[in-house]
Length: 282
Image (cartoon, rainbow, N blue to C red; front, side):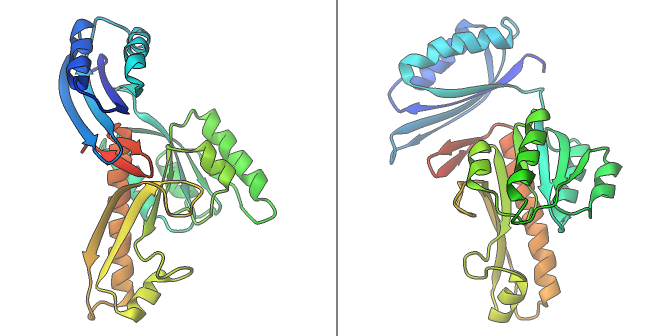
């Protein structure tokens, strides 16, 4: 396991890329264990994820050889040791269902994460964080203190070496600056009622309108609010017999499951950015 890696790459499509990648790995002692690729005909881009074992070269040596290999293909690539969990910081506000679900899955060995810290603008979940032995940082946010609060948040993220930030129902809009700093490594979850039912109590609004489907969307964070590249979505059916409380409970379950899947796929390096979309090798 210590010699197993995940290589992800994207480049302009052309014949022979799969053959070239396979040949490169064979030449350097790699044994492919899992591989998937996708050709986007609309953009002319090629995407690939390869999991392989290689005991002959160190991680640094592999990266050096990959850099030389990738240049003629104009390749964007990443190499990750499979055994290294993804260092993660979680943001939360006053709704803890997604946080609680992620912490349980992590401790159960279902998510390859190393959760380094929890950041919240409220104190509600400091005991939950303590029960999992995760440092809890209470950083209040107001309109007047937002720049200082985000500077402190970014300081924690950087000091923990976090590669992933999960907004687990964090009910604050991130600034454009923080969105740029976290580009491609921050995942948000929200209910599916946007943009129809904005603001407070969306499930009450949805119930009042008699919706038949509720759901959730997990996406990467961008400066465009709730419009980043989508990683995962799901829905659940409801009907006229469901009370607001039923919709809310079912919605929270869906949010937790969708976010967990998105975090799992990201942490397994199965998600590649494709402009304002994603390629997900499940």
